[in-house]
Image 1 (cartoon, each protein chain N blue to C red):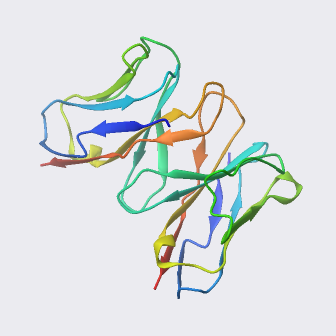
Image 2 (image 1 turned 135 degrees about the vertical axis):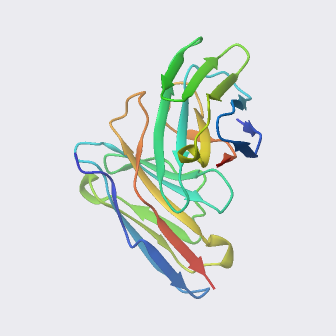
Length: 113
Length: 112
């Protein structure tokens, strides 16, 4: 089966600019997650979708981050305006909602200068 | 707030040696996950531990879960260079959810 697709792989922007990341989950996976992984740390959940509804966005900095999952398939994560501390790898993951865990995409490495 | 701690954070070991990575978590959970991450790559699922006393083995890696002690171990037997990576454990935030809290990671370097 095809894995979780993410794009772009890398992005460099200046602070205060905006950026968007795209994720296409594994076909049939109802649950989609966006994680932020700062260098040297474990991933931190930003937002969880079940189909096209938000289940948990308690860790999402809503003043600058937004995410949507239209039609319950692809998802986009946007940052506007970006800050230096947003430099991280943004990982998308999907699951069938079972206890067997997620499948992660390859991630987007964001550098804010 | 759920805390997931791993130790050691860094581990440098010689090929052929054995070692154990520890993952402690602060609230009750009957599930725990281990992931591997190579530099610049995404996370790959290694083990899914679903009950107290669960033990899983794959090659030179063996993971176990003690839910009463809130502890999981990842044991490396006769390490080889290919095992060099960062290893993360993850625990569900609350029972029955799929929001995982990840540990800080253990960066393993196996020296030839």
